[in-house]
Image (cartoon, rainbow, N blue to C red; front, top):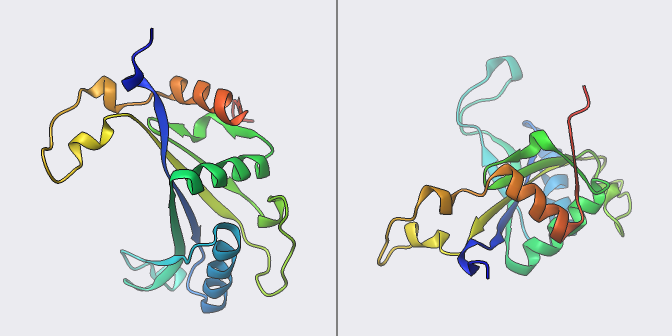
Length: 173
């Protein structure tokens, strides 16, 4: 019998769109995230200044939304379908998988909207094991072992293949 504390689960999915300083694109990106997730997106600000790109410190440069629970699971399944069921092995990291979707029209049931234009997005999914929260909660924090905290790339690849029908492919050089 396997240890149930070793089971992997989807903790959260973060949808991110880096857009630069255009306010029109900011509003379009917020509308797109609302359309895809039903959530209102928050804006992200630059941490440093980049004079070559005309970006000042503290300037709004993107939008982000975080999904948890069943919403996260449903969105990740739709995003993987939009990515044609393939994820590059380079997108796998310990505890997370990251991939991009070039155009939002790849999502099933989503039509092109001229007000939004053509935008892509980054999807970051974070995975954990049961008991992960023990180190991060406010009351009665405790230590967990390194092996328990880390979901390796191979474990993550097999989990994705089993639960999301994903094909993990090697990078195309």
